[in-house]
Amino acid sequence: MIIEPRMRGFICLTAQPKGSEQSVKNQIEYVKSKGTIAGAKKVLVIGASTGFGLASRITSAFGSDAATIGVFFEKEASEGKTASPGWYNSAAFENEAHKAGLYAKSINGDAFSNEVKRQTLDLIKADLGQVDLIIYSLASPVRLNPNTGVLHRSVLKPIGQTFTNKTVDFHTGKVSEVSIEPCNEEDIVNTVAVMGGEDWAMWIDALKAENLLAEGATTVAYSYIGPSLTEAVYRKGTIGRAKDHLEATAFTISDSLADINGKAYVSVNKALVTQASSAIPVIPLYISLLYKIMKEKGIHEGCIEQIQRLYQQRLYTGEPMITDEKGRIRVDDWEMREDVQSQVAALWEQATTENLAEIGDLEGYRNDFYNLFGFGFDGVDYKADTNELVKVPSIS
Image (cartoon, rainbow, N blue to C red):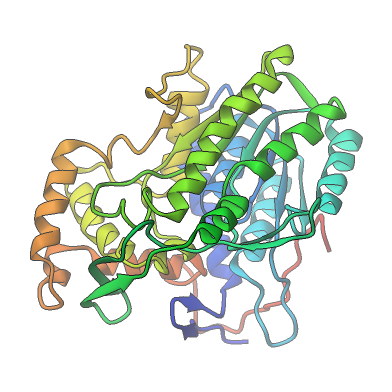
């Protein structure tokens, strides 16, 4: 079939397997170009199919020659209907890993469930024995707690008062004002249940209980802080409460791993275009201005550049870990530089529909958005007939 982007609001309903394959190959080549990383050799990535999770799996495999198990929840293709982009990413990754002689297997299902945890534990036990790095990179709007049976839905809302500020429709470039009503207490509880650290801790507890964590095992979850411009709706809103919980959980997990000299960290990463961030008011405008400035300064990074730097310059330097005053790894350091943020704040005040294309990088934002779904890559013939029925080797 001829596969073209088909949009509904902030969601692309189609994905391009050849483009996703090219995206994965580009990321692999970047990691290989940066040299060998003396990192973990047996890696579990929970949330492995897109964004930072996919970049983590690629960096582990092609930076450190690691065996990887990836857990994700993606939709397989059917006749005339494409798979979700993460499915195609995972298929491309496995194919490239196998070509390179690397172990790579995947599990597709609800990572919050006890069933998928059990399936993963059994696979580690059978094939790897133990793992020495666990990346936790889940991004889901809902979570069914496997112990209580309660379905929790996260919300993006400020706490205490209505939030009003600028935003942009990145499809049209129209800058407008948006208002978001404040949350109630139940909203906070539900968002923390979905996006906080409870499930991360459940994974580590389950792995440790069956002796599947190697001596000195490390686990890393990903978070975001961001600037004062976005904090009312993000870091000081419902999502911020969830991130606070996630970050506090790192200390609890570290305590539980002390007997194997293990450690848990939260890595605070840069603002990037994701399916989730595209739907958050204010964030697309902020990112388009941020991209413009960081590209001009030569310090812009995408997911793969961020994670490769995290591994090579933070996790596996051979030196003691450098963290901030709250014990977090900071690879948002370039984004949060004073010179960068002061310029973003100045441009924010100026931004209008008429001038955004000039003062921001809205085109770069759009390109990154379409790249998420496998569109817009050089070397891909998007007019060619493409087989949508791609298999993930270890699943199908």
